[in-house]
Length: 265
Image 1 (tube, one colour):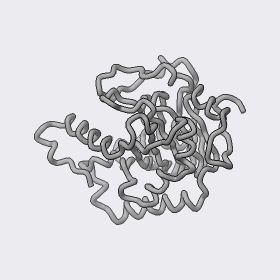
Image 2 (cartoon, rainbow, N blue to C red; image 1 turned 135 degrees about the vertical axis):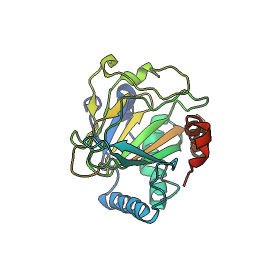
Image 3 (cartoon, helix red, strand yellow; image 1 turned 90 degrees about the horizontal axis):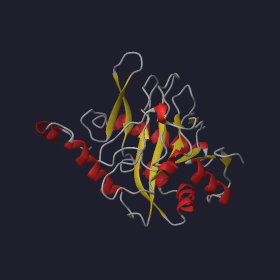
Image 4 (tube, one colour; image 1 turned 90 degrees about the vertical axis):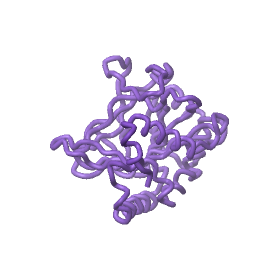
């Protein structure tokens, strides 16, 4: 297997070769982790939530984010962050041994769910700027990695996630000041790789792996479930703690007289 190339999994633990590839490249693609029925069930449950919980898709809901449309500039709904507390199917997927065993084999110890988000990315939505997922908050786990479960095809046209391999070994590339920082493409010293995925495929990438995405120019949504984990020895179960601190961080960036308007529903 060539460095960073996708592999097909018939079992839930990674081989030594795959683990070495992940640590060297900063990412790994695993094919056919979930069957089409499971992916369809997840997608249907998210659609049910969007239909039944109309109050959720609101710009002042802390779990929701919007992106501008690449042509019109109008805001379009893009992210539910988190979703596992609203969908039993999503929560079951975060704990599915086919995922947790993959991640645990990288850690060499049990994996704990750190956060989760469902990125809807409708047709026309802008992409994400180049960044690393890690943020310089006290106690933020450095073992944090993300398992991206593809619900729709990820490719160049749909605005797939793209990573710069091998740069995760340089650690965090921005000031450790607790703020989110974007990176500059011209400072990257490797070529970006597009994580091309089909529904049910999974891509793993480190919190230090620089990555970005471009606009979704396909005629349909590019949905993906991004589930992040940390090693048990690196803080244990932190899902509730993370979102409590995340929401405090968001509110602190708002004008003081507006903070009470933002809720988590």
